[in-house]
Image (cartoon, rainbow, N blue to C red; front, top):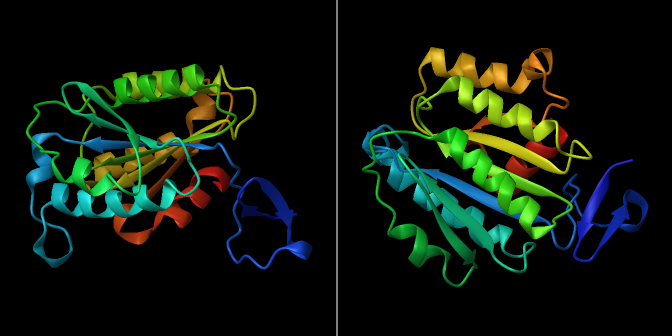
Length: 217
């Protein structure tokens, strides 16, 4: 039976007037990975915006919505040639923190982003974490990304404990699209214990639909 969100408890369809088919719980954890590689400066997003400016606008909206449920504040991890952690992002400070991000790094270390997010999940003792990865580009190492995801799936106790939602920004080439599709559909054939990956275009989703895709894929 579908489960709907009410802060602090789960509700069934019969006792809920909610309209979102979600499974959110008080204390769930949300991590936003923001690609700050130099290619994010490309201007091919709605209204002629650059990828990074469009991403910042959307991620700020996501962060404000997510902070209603992640009451200790969400984590933002920028990733390029390094991973930088911004802690305790709330509705009040999301715009200020995210607006200052710049796309000027020379690599896209998506694997390290996933490892850092998983470590934050474990250190926090969360029952459920969703990592949103907003990116436009080729990871520095495809094999490292696959290995990082497979390692996570072999450590979780439940497939909904840790989920990854890749949110693509701008025009994505077919090779990268095919790679992300394989992460979504084929990793169990390469040793992953569970399917924990979902892929969507950032322009097609809001926070609620991205979350629903991540846990219901």
